[in-house]
Length: 81
Image 1 (spheres, rainbow, N blue to C red):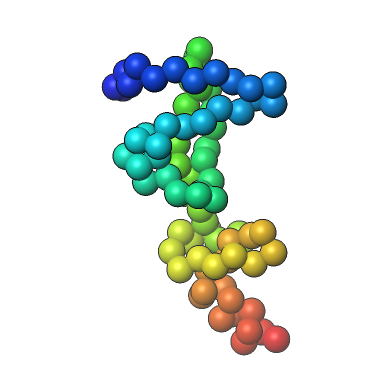
Image 2: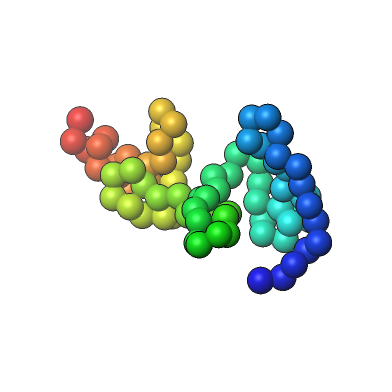
Protein backbone atom coordinates (compact mmCIF):
# COMPACT_ATOMS: atom_id res chain seq x y z
CA UNK A 1 0.00 0.00 0.00
CA UNK A 2 1.33 3.41 -0.97
CA UNK A 3 1.82 5.94 1.84
CA UNK A 4 0.42 9.24 0.58
CA UNK A 5 1.74 11.21 3.54
CA UNK A 6 -1.65 12.91 3.94
CA UNK A 7 -3.10 13.25 7.43
CA UNK A 8 -6.66 14.26 8.26
CA UNK A 9 -8.24 15.17 11.58
CA UNK A 10 -11.45 13.40 12.64
CA UNK A 11 -14.20 15.81 13.72
CA UNK A 12 -16.52 15.43 16.72
CA UNK A 13 -18.97 13.37 14.63
CA UNK A 14 -16.26 10.92 13.50
CA UNK A 15 -16.00 12.34 9.98
CA UNK A 16 -12.95 13.13 7.88
CA UNK A 17 -12.43 14.25 4.29
CA UNK A 18 -10.92 11.95 1.67
CA UNK A 19 -8.51 14.07 -0.38
CA UNK A 20 -9.72 14.94 -3.86
CA UNK A 21 -6.69 13.28 -5.48
CA UNK A 22 -7.47 9.95 -3.77
CA UNK A 23 -11.15 10.19 -4.78
CA UNK A 24 -10.14 10.90 -8.36
CA UNK A 25 -7.58 8.08 -8.37
CA UNK A 26 -10.15 5.55 -7.10
CA UNK A 27 -13.03 7.01 -9.16
CA UNK A 28 -15.10 7.76 -6.05
CA UNK A 29 -17.96 10.09 -7.00
CA UNK A 30 -20.53 11.99 -4.97
CA UNK A 31 -23.15 9.59 -3.49
CA UNK A 32 -21.02 6.47 -4.10
CA UNK A 33 -21.10 3.87 -1.33
CA UNK A 34 -17.92 2.86 0.50
CA UNK A 35 -17.26 -0.36 2.38
CA UNK A 36 -15.45 0.16 5.68
CA UNK A 37 -13.92 -2.69 7.66
CA UNK A 38 -10.89 -3.49 9.78
CA UNK A 39 -7.91 -5.78 9.33
CA UNK A 40 -6.02 -5.98 12.58
CA UNK A 41 -5.14 -2.39 13.52
CA UNK A 42 -5.96 -0.99 10.06
CA UNK A 43 -9.17 0.59 8.79
CA UNK A 44 -9.82 -0.39 5.17
CA UNK A 45 -12.03 1.82 3.00
CA UNK A 46 -12.92 0.73 -0.52
CA UNK A 47 -15.53 1.61 -3.11
CA UNK A 48 -18.55 -0.65 -2.62
CA UNK A 49 -19.81 -2.89 -5.38
CA UNK A 50 -23.56 -2.26 -5.47
CA UNK A 51 -25.86 -5.14 -6.34
CA UNK A 52 -29.53 -5.82 -6.98
CA UNK A 53 -31.50 -6.27 -3.73
CA UNK A 54 -33.44 -9.14 -5.32
CA UNK A 55 -30.98 -11.21 -7.36
CA UNK A 56 -27.49 -9.87 -6.61
CA UNK A 57 -26.59 -8.74 -10.15
CA UNK A 58 -24.18 -5.81 -10.37
CA UNK A 59 -25.13 -4.38 -13.78
CA UNK A 60 -28.07 -2.33 -15.10
CA UNK A 61 -29.04 -1.10 -11.62
CA UNK A 62 -31.64 1.56 -10.90
CA UNK A 63 -32.56 3.21 -7.58
CA UNK A 64 -35.96 2.31 -6.14
CA UNK A 65 -36.97 3.43 -2.62
CA UNK A 66 -33.32 3.62 -1.47
CA UNK A 67 -32.62 0.14 -2.88
CA UNK A 68 -30.79 -1.00 -6.01
CA UNK A 69 -32.81 -3.20 -8.39
CA UNK A 70 -31.62 -4.48 -11.77
CA UNK A 71 -33.66 -3.87 -14.91
CA UNK A 72 -34.14 -7.62 -15.34
CA UNK A 73 -35.90 -7.90 -11.97
CA UNK A 74 -37.98 -4.81 -12.75
CA UNK A 75 -39.12 -6.56 -15.95
CA UNK A 76 -40.01 -9.73 -14.01
CA UNK A 77 -42.03 -7.69 -11.51
CA UNK A 78 -43.87 -5.89 -14.33
CA UNK A 79 -44.72 -9.24 -15.93
CA UNK A 80 -45.92 -10.61 -12.58
CA UNK A 81 -48.25 -7.67 -12.00
